[in-house]
Amino acid sequence: MPRPTRVMPSLLSADFANLQRDIERIPSADALHVDVMDNHFVPNLTLGLPVVEAIRAVTPTMLDLHLMIEDPDRWAPAYAEAGAESVTFHAEAAAAPVRLSRELRARGARAGLALRPATPVEPYADLLDEVDMLLLMTVEPGFGGQKFLDLCLPKIRRARALIGAHGGDIWLQVDGGVSLETVERCVEAGADALVAGSAVFGADDPDAMVARLRALGDAAQDDESGDDPAR
Ligand code: DX5
Ligand code: ZN
Image 1 (spheres, rainbow, N blue to C red):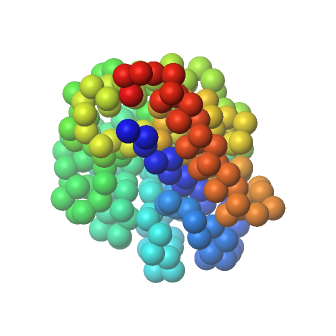
Image 2: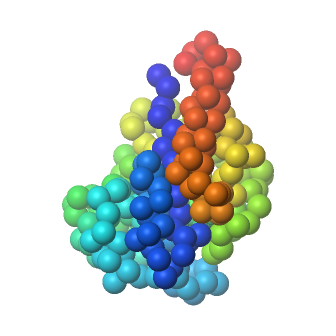
C-alpha cells in the first residue's frame, strides 16, 4: 500500500515578523512544523508557548511541534493543551518517554519521538506502541539550512523496517536538509513525512515547492514499491 507523502514546512525559515503572512503562502502544507529551541538542548533559541498559541489562533492547519528542549517531561504537555495536533520531543532529553507520550495522547495530541543523527533507533523499538511518529534528524538539530547527512539513510531504512514489523500506522518523519535534491533518497529509504524549511521558504513560490516535494516523494515511493514484490 502506498503511503501518502506529507510535506510539513518548517516555520524556522519563515519571517518571524510576518508568520501569519508566511503561513498563508503555503495553503497546501500538510502541517506546519514549529521548531521550539531552548538554547540548552540545542545552541539556538526560537520561540515558545505564547508564539505557538498565537500561531494556533490564525490557522486551522495541523501544527507539528518539534521540541528541541531539555526537560520535555515538564514542558511538552502544555503544547498539546495549546492545541497542537502533534508534539514531538527528543529521546535524548526525556526522562520518562513512555509516561510523556501517554500524557500527550491523553491531551489529544499525536506523540512523536525524535532522535539526533547519532542516536540509534533500535533501543526504541519496544516503544512503538506508545508513539504516533518517529522523527529522524538528518542534520544536527539547531539550525535551518544545513546539508543533509547521508549517513542517516541506513537508520531511516531500519526505522521503516521496525515500523513495518510493528504494523501500526506510525509516521516516519525526516527533518534537516530536505530539498528537491534529497527528497527521493528520504522517501526511498522509508520516510513519509518530510520537514523542509529553507527549501520551501527560499523558493519563489513556496506552495508550488510543497507540491513539487510531495510529487517527487510520491513518485519515489511508487518506484520503490515496484522494485519490491513483497509490497
Ligand atoms: C533544525 C530544525 C529543522 C529546520 C530544517 O534543527 O529542526 O526543522 O528548520 O531546516 P532545513 O529544511 O532548512 O534544513
Ligand atoms: Zn524541526
